[in-house]
Amino acid sequence: MKIFCKNRINLKFRDSELLLDPKIMDSSASCIFVSHAHTDHLPRSKKKPNFTPTAVCSEATARLFFERMGYEVQQNHSWSNDEFEIKTLPGGHTFDSTVAEISNLETGQNIIYTGDINIENRGYLKGFEPKKCDILILEATWGDRDYRFPSFEKQIEKAKEFILHELEKGYPVALLGYSLGKSQLLNYCLGNLSDTRFSSNSIWKMEQVHRELGLNLFETEKLPQNLEEEAIANSSPWILFYNHVGYKDPTLGKLKTKYNLKVVGFSGWAKDLESYKYRMGADAAFTISDHSDYNSLLEIVKKSDPDKIFTVFGNAHELAKDLQKDGFNAVPLKEGQSTLDNFF
Image 1 (cartoon, rainbow, N blue to C red):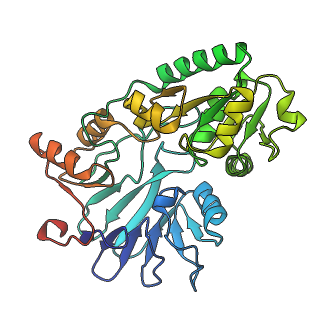
Image 2: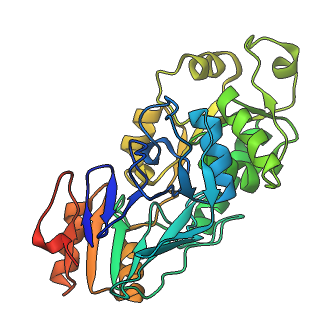
């Protein structure tokens, strides 16, 4: 088996190939795995391929894949041939996210590809539970030792206090989060703070899809295009679920001017609080990430106890160096890399 980074991540067996979160749908691959429906894990082109890809993923990912890409995949929870078997485990990153557990049937090796993960229980999300494996392909978004975060529950409680204080003063509050993942979590945890709730168009669409998938969310209305409409102008202090955009966003600017809107950001980047608030034009910010922080990544490694670690995405180089210092056999998996370290 060979592991390398070409079509995002490739696992090449003797007579077959498995693609992990591929950038290009390749008909020559035996199977693909899609960890979740964030765009950085989906194909780069929305052009429909001339075949129906066989994909191992959650039902929610298959539905969201169609919503974002415009074509369907043949969804499977597991798949196998004579050389490998793949199945999914809960990933804890988003409602739809999964981790790939791959068995090399020739060598007996067990491989875990994390995709994006979080081991912390958050709202409706059960954290990923690390599992013993021989080879760990580990995401490293927060693989820098500077990114150690407070607990989710503590940050949510602080956010509630700030939001309620502003609502009680008569100010509406915008909660910034990515349209898929973060915004649904904020709705679930903070949507009860006001009876009047609006969402940007893209977040509202994702809300409807997640409802169809069985997620219990607070209902919101689409933010009116005319910001002076009665629905928004004469409502009690409202909450707005809005895309994770910076201070130059014209809609937020108008709402700030007209209604004294308060803006609250939610991101791992809020660890650098003042810098983040400035870049986002936020009045407050809370360190809530959908990814595991540095300490959690170390915990995953220790509990997985792998013989070999490949770090991918984000701070892959930094994390691999730290793991090497701790005695682990770790290397960053780089685009186009093909060395003896990649053969098993």
